[in-house]
Image 1: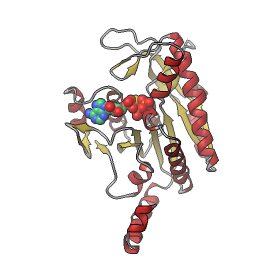
Image 2: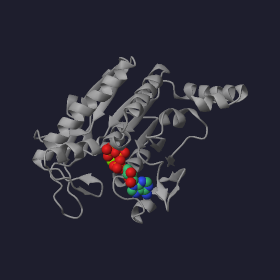
Image 3: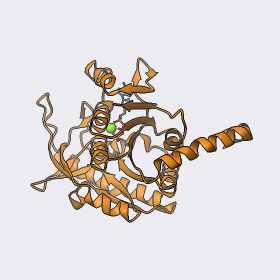
Image 4: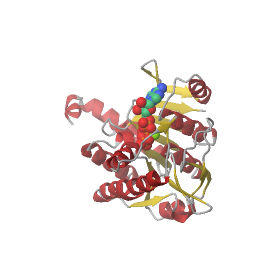
Length: 288
Ligand SMILES: Nc1ncnc2c1ncn2[C@@H]1O[C@H](COP(=O)(O)OP(=O)(O)OP(=O)(O)O)[C@@H](O)[C@H]1O
Ligand SMILES: [Mg+2]
């Protein structure tokens, strides 16, 4: 708020005019927002996030939220004495790990986000990939041959349930759990889920909120990358850990028709609004 007081009335007017043109442009558009577990840190930030998403809805955009929850899942596993390990940003998931992951993601975190959104008069509804056959998953095999356990890949996305909700003005909030055709529960990477949902819904935009400013090369933020440039960074190993599935999700989204994908720092207050409603934007934008 302090910074608002420092800008002149003329600047405020220009900012508002700038925002209005985007509001018109985005009206009725589906925007998929991946809310990274890494960005869900402080209570205050979670409240800012909820306010922003409800604002988008009240401005006539149709937001769809997909959330992660890596740090909370790891914390719960450790509290229960379970082992935590990752390979290329994917969580190796035993049967016991899977039960905890589902409990934390679909139970605790999903409902916490719903509570925040609905406190601000949102019409949020929490679902997991299991609901309404939203996400059909299969056992993912890692290229190294290491058994990842209950880590799933996405076979098929059935967005019918989301259309039903969106058409009635509800705001879907999706936890990254999928169901195999044989009834097995799978732990999915939330970036992958967000990307498949964005493609299935013909989204106008996908935004990944994480805990870094965007894609970094030698500690320098990359404001804009093409699909080709991003693919090269992945091949060169510049992108590591949790940024690998995120970069792949960005590539998938843009390659299959989502016009733009953004990676932004969700630990900055109101980052979604800054990205959507200003000319300059923030973070890394990836275009085809
Ligand atoms: N080149 C890179 N540029 C930026 N971040 C990178 C890069 N390589 C690796 N990373 C790491 O990727 C991390 C983000 O992925 P991570 O999976 O940890 O978070 P998230 O996806 O937002 O949360 P969650 O997995 O819980 O949904 C960053 O914190 C950073 O450490
Ligand atoms: Mg991640």
